[in-house]
Amino acid sequence: MTSLDRLLRPRHIAVLGAGWARNVIEQCEKMGFAGQVWPVHPTKDEVHGYRTYRSVADLPEPPDAAFLGVNRNLTVQVVRDLAALGAGGAVCFAAGFGEMGAEGQRLQADLVAAAGDLAVAGPNSNGLINRLDRLALWPMADHDPAPVDRGPAIISQSGGIAHAFVRDRRGLAPAVVASTGNQVLLDVADWLAVLGEDPRVTAIGIFMEGPGDVAALAEAAGVTRGRNLPVVV
Image (tube, rainbow, N blue to C red; front, top):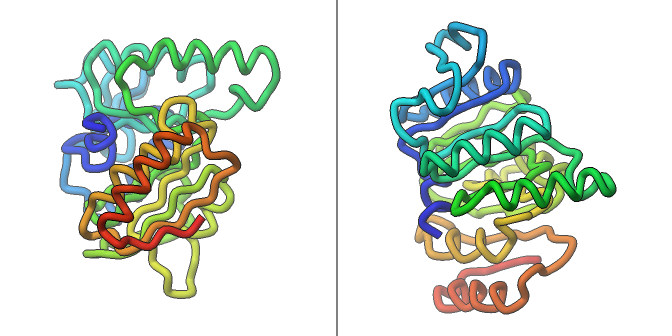
């Protein structure tokens, strides 16, 4: 839970993957993220005007959050490196894990083993937006995020559904959108427990393909029930 809190409300973020990293940085700038931004790239000297670091081991300190816009094999290695540093969490954008047959399942098992206490969203996650705290670990530059003081949260295993809520123009204006992807470490229950305790969250909408850890989900629902917080699944 502490790691997930760092991922949701980071003081500093690391971004990997030159093209996707640029989009994430732009989205954070539009949102007004006030923390430090550290692009990581093995050969580029700067990304979107920010000085780069050659590897996560070269970062000034363990980042609270990271966006990994790199291939699936490199994702496993970077997660291992972040965990060894004591980072908070990471959004893993790459697909091709448990949803892609035996090789993908092997890689997914490697990812779980590499993660340790790291709060991992994904893999196969479209990203994370927290407009309450001006964070946009979101690689699609097709919307103009703006901060809000309160509002509903969306937790979606489907990346397409998460993307639809981010682009929504009908006035819902979700305060938080979490694309949970394959849910190898963080599942719906984890997000529900943490977001359910945030007094700025006014309701929670969930799109899930399966309940995961049912006991944990029931415990997390107790948090929202105690607040009389509406939850729609």
